[in-house]
Image 1: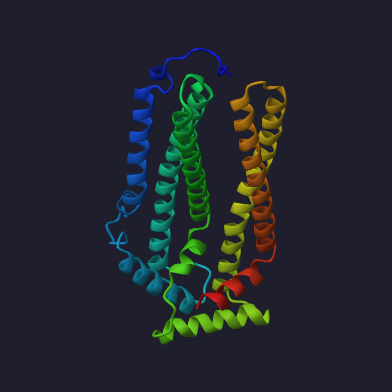
Image 2 (image 1 turned 180 degrees about the vertical axis):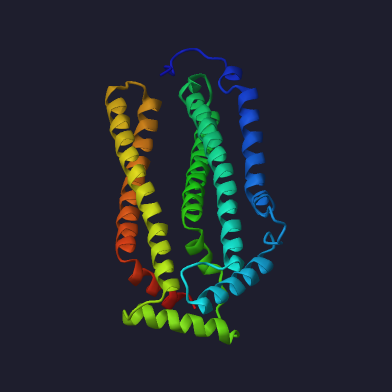
Length: 281
């Protein structure tokens, strides 16, 4: 780690080309994250990139699936689920690239902050603020990656909130009522309900596994930050390590809460799905 006491010219604190390139790449990826997934995922040109078309196709496919009473999803529903899977894969890949870019940008800014002994208080504060903001954006990108991994693993469950309410649709409302009855009364369930319960379990298992990995990683990083904090004699390094260690510790706690909540939902997927249907429409 570079000592802040070394004389460094202000022009060499932040590599301008690297900063500009990473910033431009991050902005391009944010734009792609918003605009690219729908058209890239709609390979069959079914018009699913349009939300109204997607919702109507989901409604029709879901009703056909429920009325069939079988375990095999009809083509009308499968086409929507396949689109939603591709959508999450595309968005997840772009979000992962954005996450890597933001991490690199944050590291560049924080390293510059540690070398900023020759700069004034205002410039050092600007570097610290920029580093904190980019780190926050990186955390947001991480959440987007997690959400899209979850959606890609269990696209059917991810689609369920997009179903219309059924308030003005007797056929859909009837399907919802029958689903609620089977889930709430714990009677013998039909294959479509069994399929939804299983997919809902996968939906929560995915987040539980990711949360476990995050918790283990965060605990490890907290230990590393603490050891470096104890050994460092550099004031700015100690401040940065203290702040990052605190944030990472909070992340580990949040990951443990997420792990517990999703593990419980996965183990009681019938109850969780019943709560979803009872509270969503």
